[in-house]
Length: 309
Image (cartoon, rainbow, N blue to C red; front, side, top):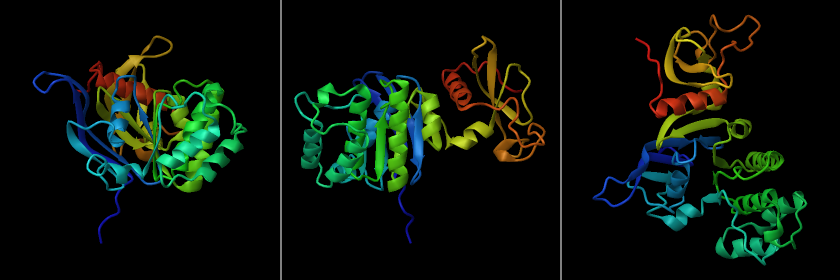
């Protein structure tokens, strides 16, 4: 019996911009990424890391230079219409049209997507107290983002791709967006890939993290593993079983180093060890998700600074 396809997979995906006979610019290099069913995966990285390019390839808006993508087992470049029926998309800047009401946007989405559930999307909008008759160009940034999310959810797609939807929102609007997103995902069992450079927000929303830097996947694992399998120090002395990942400047201007624990070393994968207190509390040098991201991005820029002998 064949194994069920994952909701989203990329296989050695590379993308180069520029003429074939020129060196060009590599936006992505051999990206392998798997997004398990029902998960909310954070795609984290700085501007220019390749996050938007990867999402565009998954949406068949861009063609990869090499490699392939599968959405529920469907190649979006070979079978675009079939793949797009399985994907809901939320861009960084909501696509709203002057003169059209919120209700008009839902009607337009219904005309463009045969499976669009207008009643479901309207219910999401009404839940937020956004008037259906209000012109979309008079919505606040947070309301416009919620409209875009409601439309994406209304497609009833099995995979949701969100390209930096939090970037232009204030803290309260970001919190409300995440709350509505998680409620919908949990209710529907939808799988999501959330691109962002705001680590604190994705830490709240996601259960997996993929760190993208210089067009490469530097780390891809469950969020809990990213924290418990790494340690942070302000010296060159490694923790037991630690391998240096990257060093960066901390908030107090000290140079900090991120270490990855080897399997079976004290504290790795939640195993008991010298750095875990008797009361079960996390060790003092436990790395936060932000520490993990900064360490891998520093390593991706070739600034690891320290290596074990």
